[in-house]
Length: 456
Ligand SMILES: Nc1ncnc2c1ncn2[C@@H]1O[C@H](COP(=O)(O)OP(=O)(O)OP(=O)(O)O)[C@@H](O)[C@H]1O
Ligand SMILES: [Mg+2]
Image (cartoon, rainbow, N blue to C red; front, top):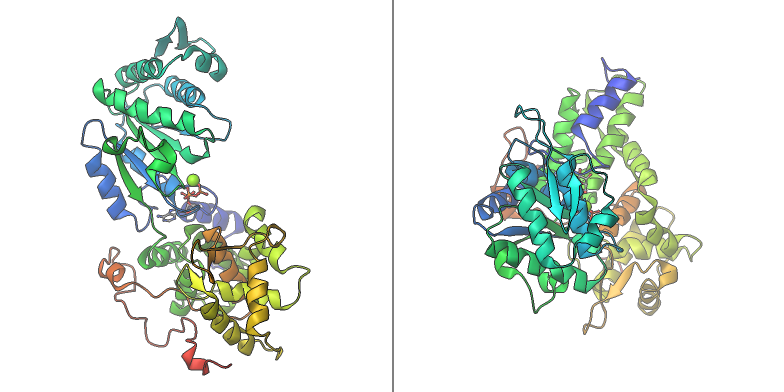
């Protein structure tokens, strides 16, 4: 067994400290590659009346950035207020939730007074020993003005610099309810109420979320969160491995960075399982090499949450055997939107790499099979680009990473994205071995189609 010097419970405890596949991060120490975004948020929040909206795809790290930024801004006399949107939420239920969170977290021990506070609204009292359900509170809010009144009382009593995180704002289904937040921010600005809001959501634009008429563009700094950069992916792996006093083979580090497709969850999950594989190894491990990575990758795949892997399974299980190759071919290459021609090239390379000498299907059949991937019964894996016949993208971008992991575990290395030279210029962490835009010598990052003669 082994990582020398560790028992199972110690491995578990350390992994929990250095990796977080299952929960958002809330400290700068563990939030990798988001220095620029944190700086933008910090600077924006100096402006009175300005709030933050973090938008990005599912799983890129919105909640983590929001939480870390919130803890950064919140004064030390209390903790940030966290609420999360759900389909059945209304403006009133969210505000009610904020109110009851605010009174439930009175000033911390930093300050001597442990006294909590209460909020009065429409003749009811929230907090100070009164048990009010969120339903009661929601019912007492009759207008945006009432909500502003509640927030103004929170601003006065909660802490010096209070901040509210409204995570998954876009989950609130009713557009009219969401629009009321635009009005809220405006009125808060007019009354100079000192509470900052940080929203997160998956939608592309604020108009989509807040409605074009009443949009609160002047009140909101929008942060569009991209996938995690290369440095950050490497840092997650390296810092976790280093915490056990181990090294990681550079090629392995690169493969983890590549198959993850920039989704931190995959990086955490593969690294965690790989370290467990190291612990289970017969001989003492010094460096994480290819074999442990393969074992870790397999374990990571089988523990990926069911909701994420279901579309993949719908597309390949109990289907013609070619579907596996077809789906993998759609996840090749860095472009998110790809043409049928391009994907068919990837498909040919994949078939040629298959050890079982399978024969490839014709272009026309390939096209009709890819079209099927749009269907519900095939998990709606792909969607066709509007006004661009023959061009496809992933309906759920995060699924692409899972498809890549599947291909990799079956011995097919897909071409990943290329490290972007601009990202490579900001080398933040002195511990990171990676110093430039080019790959280290001898690192296989996937084959080029031209390397294989493009086999037709
Ligand atoms: N900058 C980062 N560095 C390291 N790990 C990160 C970073 N951002 C997020 N993570 C990790 O990635 C996972 C997903 O992050 P998070 O939950 O913040 O994403 P999200 O965009 O809110 O996802 P969802 O759309 O599912 O709500 C978490 O396990 C988190 O710990
Ligand atoms: Mg989230």
